[in-house]
Image 1 (cartoon, rainbow, N blue to C red):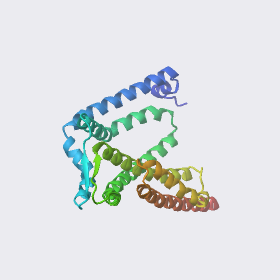
Image 2 (image 1 turned 90 degrees about the horizontal axis):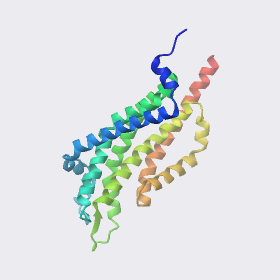
Image 3 (image 1 turned 90 degrees about the vertical axis):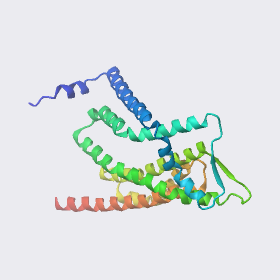
Image 4 (image 1 turned 180 degrees about the horizontal axis):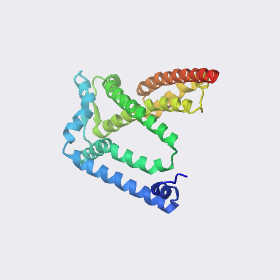
Length: 256
């Protein structure tokens, strides 16, 4: 009879205190990676912030009466800290994702690990596509929003406000691109059928707009629509994939 390896036996026999100790170890390593990466990117603030403010600068180049400004004594420091932390979070992602995986993987079965690998392999490119799309549409979105500024008024936007807008939009676009993947995963796992998803198309549209409303920090309906429309398109693609997968299962069942 094959015996479990010592490491598997140890993981399976861990007490609650040992689980908390393991979690603390993974969190400490992730935090250290974040701190090291923050220090590493601190001196690259100008280059990173130039990329972040590029959508705003492109709107100014179109003649918009919008001005980006710092509004406090400590605003410059807090801005550099927030930008550095955001960049470090992305830069250190392979490390903290690995630490997360090392914590949860011992509790997964072999087939569950395969699903996790497949989900991650698809999720990372999808999330990246969402971020890129947000960056691409942001100048147009800002241009439309600034058109509502009266001609005799300057729209002075705080850098903190713009940074929050930028981070919220890119993050939620990325997450929005993952939601259809969740639907497909549930279908492949046999939890949701394609027909059920198809029948729920109104709820998918409503859910996309609700998500867009939550995603946009200022609650602007135009920004909400910019977030919701790609989600709706991706959701209908997910429904199509689910229907195709259901037909494939039916054919396999008929053959067997």
